[in-house]
Length: 232
Picture 1 (cartoon, rainbow, N blue to C red):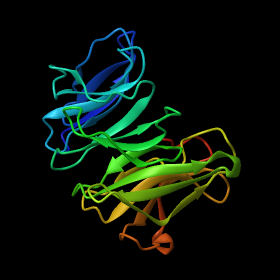
Picture 2 (cartoon, rainbow, N blue to C red):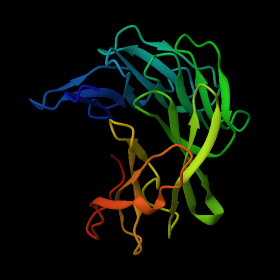
Picture 3 (cartoon, rainbow, N blue to C red):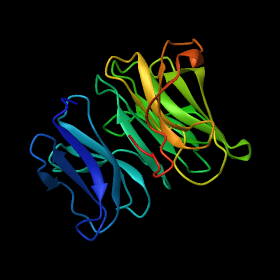
Picture 4 (cartoon, helix red, strand yellow):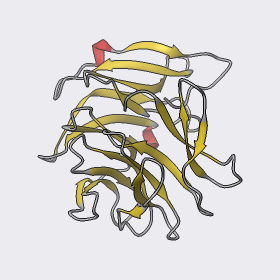
């Protein structure tokens, strides 16, 4: 959160574990060490904790630990596939996505595992909470139309809305179209999408709650025929 480190998942140890890198020095440090897969990590807004998805119980659930990987504990009880955790600024809610057919969609849950609430019942992925903790952006998609849409929900009131963030793909393979990140001031989102030629890159679009801001969309990076832009 303070811009000094990044957290990522890597199999450089021979298994899929979590690592951090200090941007100023390039120092890389392993912070989890489990025989199963640890992936999809994020820092808490205060930088004191990490969240991630792990199958160390036999299927993917949401886990939390101290920022150094110590005192790991399971948060969710999805039973099949809980992924992509993100924490609200006040630390009250973990927002995550479930691909469990019985629980499909966006959920919120307290860090102690209580209060699990089904926010949106839709196929999708990769939620991200706004810097002020008020909204969660999430990816909703329709495979047959090869179309994805970044949609939004007010976390506390549980009120969903759209904002003109529709992404249309020309092919089924390649990056996860619509993978997004909030700007630090919460006034825009950066996201992955194909251009008119089907080449992937990073777009930026303004965010105003409940307003279609499609006209503000602009290209900022990628869009090269020589490589695929797929994450940010």
